[in-house]
Image (tube, rainbow, N blue to C red; front, side, top):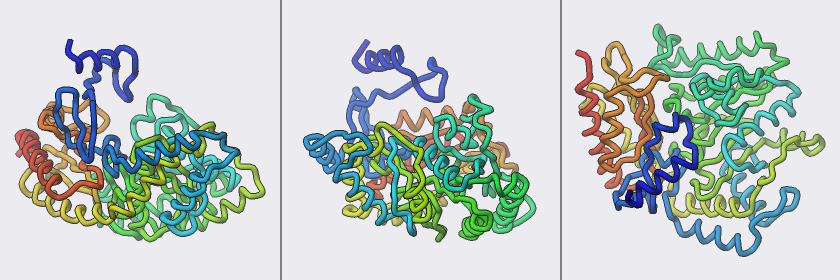
Amino acid sequence: MNQTQDIIAMNKKYTYFSWMAQETANPIAVEKAKGIYFWDYEGKRYADFSSQLILTNIGHGDERVNNAIIEQMKQVHYVQPNLVTKVRGELGKALAEVTPGDLNKAFFTLGGAEAIENAMKMARMYTGKQKIITRYRSYHGGTFAAASAGGDPRRIPIEPGVGWIIHMHDPYSYRSPIYRHCSPEEGDMILCDLLEETIQLEGANTVAGVLLEGYSGSSGVIAPSTPAYWKRVREICDKYNVVLIADEVMSGFGRTGKWFGIDHYGVVPDIMTMAKGLTSGYLPLGAVSTNEKIAAYFEKNMLACGLTYNAHAVSCAAALATIKIYHEDKLIQNAADLGQKLKHKLQLMYEKHPSIGEVRGVGLHWCIELVKNRKTREEMSEWNKPMSKPMLELSSYLRSNGIAAFVRWNQVYICPPLCINEAQLDEALAIYSKAFEITDKYVLN
């Protein structure tokens, strides 16, 4: 075997791969990465159009983060969470300056799922109630309660899961039956009415929180048609003393062309979770930010949350350096500007390729849904089933031609690092367009 085969064989023999039967794993052995690209051991370059798991927002190999990590390691690498470091306080302050409204106090975790778990705990402790309402087409992490909270099919193997999660329907105007006989705006309001009825039927005295992604991610980049949806959800939460939790693990830190996905809607949640783009994957870190009312509650009441690696100094240093890069390199503005251009380019692609059923997204956070028939909207690959032949062919073509893309069911995602330029974007889109010629052949007339 050559070096690549040796590395893959060793990994397959001694390590597990997520969300798959192990024998189906077909990984790329990555040797190095820089900017929007990574390379395998054969020297082949891949454009990282999934930003790994939609997190390498600042790109790979930024020496400013590497140097911050090294300098912090020289000073102090770790102290237990009831001690403090300068970098921990500086990071908390930096987050308070970019999070919406009065979300000014953070609890640090090591990732998004931990952030979700602790956000739900805090909502339950603060309200004295227990149930959390989430959406069916959502993903909130792989730990037990977080996976139960997600409506994504990855929850099914662990069910019944925790007993206090209630799922509601999504603002998915392309497929939800709620929208079949009304406008997208009317459908959004129906969903809000159904949320209020759910709270009433469950018992308002039992519902602690409503947990929604600030901007939907791996379930299909599904978003309401107007800010009125989020504003109505905010009103309902206020009416029934329910904590509104925004999951910004994926949509945070410029991914949507604003600091956070919820910033598109003019609504401030009570709790917000973050991870991924917080450090752009340079080191593990997550955070839960709360408003001042919740912070005041925990001044006099025990915060029953504890993690060995809470506010790990080196991870905090990576995050602080990353946030500075967002500011210095104007990456949020770049995502917004290129997002407008990408929207136009994808519309042209829609007009060219009959297998494209719908294009959804904002900033550098896009999903393309592929269909066999635009009129009937029959999926190119069934939801929650193994990928169909055309989708496998498309995925293989992208990989063979140097595009690392996130492809699942009948969906193809375009989520490159925020440091990308228009020339790099156009080079990759030309390959995507050739890939859609494959699925066009399977369109039913």
